[in-house]
Length: 219
Image (cartoon, rainbow, N blue to C red; front, side):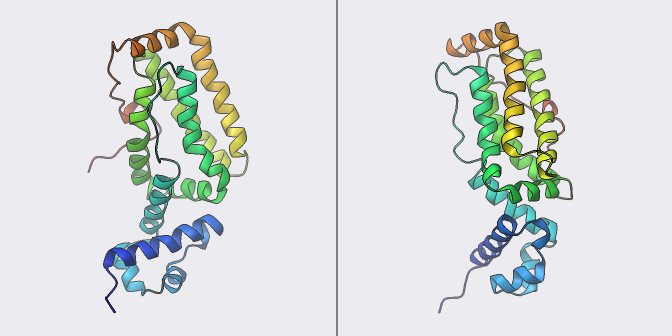
């Protein structure tokens, strides 16, 4: 029988952790239990994931890549700024609505040692599509939207994880805020759309400095 590859072992370990996070929650993930379920030794786990935090973050990154960050599309012709922003926000949040324990796990991990890895992963996935949606926006308008939306996401995620809000209610709050940012600034939003439709601008290079409190670390 061919010996299992290191990548296959790693994948099996992460599959066990993802299943535990999704069905039992963050605190259920303990290294000895993971080793037993994955049929590997603790030594094998430590070889790939030196700490429990790193193991959980790796599992969360896989889950987010396959759920919240998968197949994010550029804006179709004529899509209003409001619709584009809400499409991106729903794309990220709706998988958490179906799997609330993953939201709690993400929040717990993000407030710990794995914050930077999760932030980097999220920024890499979301910023390009957000830049396409906001292409043509005035710099100050762009900065205001990014600052408000990212801080709202940070606050609402924490409230959902703490059980204060349901994800569906968080999305409704987001919808109201984004509406205010676009409909009440209809002139700015219309100019941005007109520029984008006329091909008069390139997608802005959104940097993490306008997505506070999420921060990218340098390698």
